[in-house]
Structures are given as structure tokens and as C-alpha cells.
Image 1 (cartoon, rainbow over the protein chains, first blue to last red):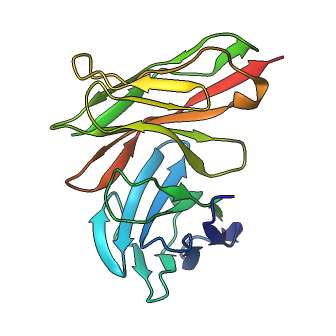
Image 2 (cartoon, rainbow over the protein chains, first blue to last red):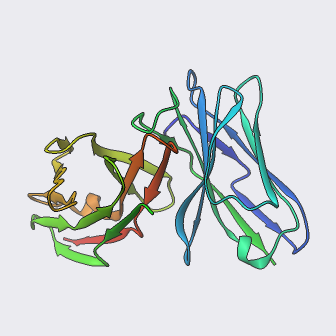
Length: 114
Length: 112
């Protein structure tokens, strides 16, 4: 158990809908990262927050947004969903915000768009 | 841009065999290098890392050496166990941009 929790574990929705994925980092970790894992694209970094502020951005679509709240939990919002958004979404956390810090991954949320 | 190339799998070995999973990278500058492991149904776990050339990362019998001259970070283990069956990801991280770039992953299957 990494100490990172993600809810829900599974999500099934329809095209055009909007969903919110939630992540609670390990106690004491200030940084949260979001990743998308799919068969065709592999594991891709989406976005990083550090202590409430956006720190780094990857291949995140404009239809996707994220935020980190004062209690350090984070939410990833996916809107106008398309079939191709079906994937496993991971959250990871680390104590600091630099790339050499160990990132601890949650178990993931599996999103299926029908 | 920065990228990581891993050997394609699946790699199938018998228990106690020697393991090598090749990883090469392309990067501008001097990345840190990582190996992550993903067991079935779980998130990724950091296996080992190296932050500069000639560093050797090691953990749980796995080793990898950061070779700048060959831009490689091959993962090795002397004697694999069935419990090592998983997907292994090589990744690089640059301080600017502050993000990890992952390879495609290599499935390892160990038979008893």
C-alpha cells in the first residue's frame, strides 16, 4: 500500500459527459501528479501540482483540468468525454516537487467511456 | 524531444534465470533515470534510480547503471523469482519541466 488513495476505482460513463477523479496524497507529501495509461499511448504525464499551485504540465488536453485543494487532495476533471479517453488514470505524490523525489503511485481509476 | 526506448516483451524466463531488460534514452542535458515496476492490478512502484552518470541504482536484487556514453540504463537481476512477474518501466526525468517520461514498458513472466 503506497498510502495514496484514489476514488472511484472504476467509472463507466457515456461520451459527452463530465467526470471527476479524486486523489489523496500520502501524509506529508506536498506534490501531486496525474498520469494517463492507455494501450495506444502508454503512460503519459498530465500535470503536477505542488502545495496548491500548478508546477508542470504535460500532454493534458484542454478538456481536462485539475486542481489541488488546501488540504492537498487533488481532483482531475475530464469533460466532453470521448471514447479515446478510456484509460487508467493514476495519481502519484511526492514529498517535494523535484523530479528526483520518489513518486508514490495510487492504485488508479479505470475510466470507461461508452 | 526526450524519449525512452525499452526492449519489447513479453520476456519469459524460468525461475533463477538471469534477467536483462534493455533501456536507452534520448535527452538534451543530463536526465535522472528510473526503473518502476507495476504488479498486476496495482499502481507503479519505484524500483531504483540513478541521478548522474556512472551511478548504480540497486534494490531487491535488481541493478542498473547509468551509462552516459551509451545513453543506457539496463535493468539486471541475477536470479529471478516467480514473484518478479510484472511490467517494468524505464523512465527519465529532467529538472527543467519537472516531469517523468516513460518507456512503453516490458512485461516479464517468470515460470516455476
